[in-house]
Length: 606
Image 1 (cartoon, rainbow, N blue to C red):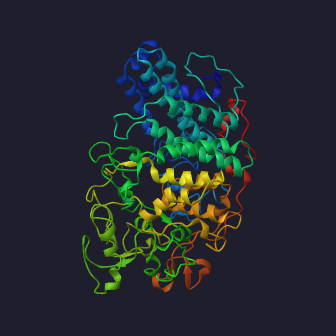
Image 2 (cartoon, rainbow, N blue to C red):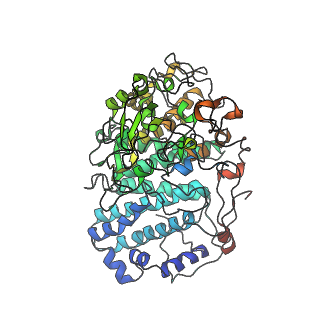
Image 3 (spheres, rainbow, N blue to C red):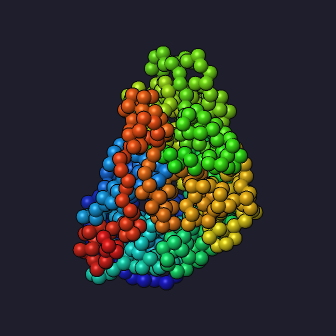
């Protein structure tokens, strides 16, 4: 493995951080004795490596960058999704700063810059010490592979945000000489090094470990290659860079290995992938993060059953879901219009019911009890949820974390009917809602998938199309597997033409547009959409006016804003139209202090 020694001044703040943080020093041993002890046995190396798993966002709300003004600051990935086109944060009444061109260069390095480098240093310490340990060669190769995987994971995050960044091949200690003018590696160098390291890891890591899909093995490395290769390949294609096919081919090869593995067939219940008390042994799960409601709990489900849930699916997002005949809402005879809240949910992809609650009405007797209104039409979707879910997951009526009843959906926050489980524009995000822990606040124990086959399938379909190899056989093992689980008719590639979706972006091939639709539906509210628009160079989608449900002003006491201030129409929370998306926004600005401390140049036009 080629070695490049590049030690730069930007790590000075990091060293200060390490010097004053005993916990970090414990995790990142500095003395030779400590390093020898830490990397002496399989168990000790495994214990050291557990720190890296905290970097998977999963159901962790803050992802170590809470409170940051940077758009990478995330809440379950949804703030980043609100920077795109299919999700909206209802409390941002002046819109996303990213979409509305209000970004500023951070003056000081934020965790989105510092934290990856802290973990890269941890990975480099592992890579430095394991080769000289007393482990046998097979175990050495395995742990080196684990270190390369997590180092690549961190650099992939940095690459997505900033492009080229400083590449650190070796471990750095406080005793090393700091060299000014270290600069940043090019995007080509960083991307090539990531692919190099992941390829080595995939070839040398153990094919499986006794971890019930809670540790990195060969399948997990392939899942990251699938994700990274697609991102980098399409970024290069649509941003006019060279060598796109190298990365697309890597993505295809990795995805094919997973598709050929019988252990990774799809789990039949889409909802349970994110709302399952245990993902151990669940088909289609490649890696997951374990939670329980005793010690290692989250507040994921509670957030979506409380007053602090502020995310809605946009009109465009809901329109992405096909009808059960496999046709769009624009051309399916099964679609009954969107001016009736009940009608627009009929005959739709089952994933829509899991993503946002279907409409209903009940009479609430007390906070936690209810009775029927006497009108059977008000409970049209009760039986639907009985057939596709259960009392631990999604049932109607909608209940907050304590079990209090929401008497009707949509429950517009502007009307103040209940202050919880509310919507701002009509389609509340329901993806992570489950009732398995009713009565306990912020002690949610549902496990979280990190890599799963739904993503691999849409990765593979898209990469194959970009390489000119997508056909019916590929559709059948990817898109059509996902549609079958959603109760939707299969894609017939030969029938997809320019008329299939009259709202299609005319610059996108009709078949590719449908592949991207499937990706949008399968991965909605998981944190992918903004990065997808960025790599496709389609952030202009996010500058379209975000609309919500069709309503009449009278039905909501004139409290909910309607597009054009009309008497009826689509909800529009943010007035006006966003400005054109600036070219330089596709890469985020480097922190200003790094420009001062090093010879790095700022990203163009910032």
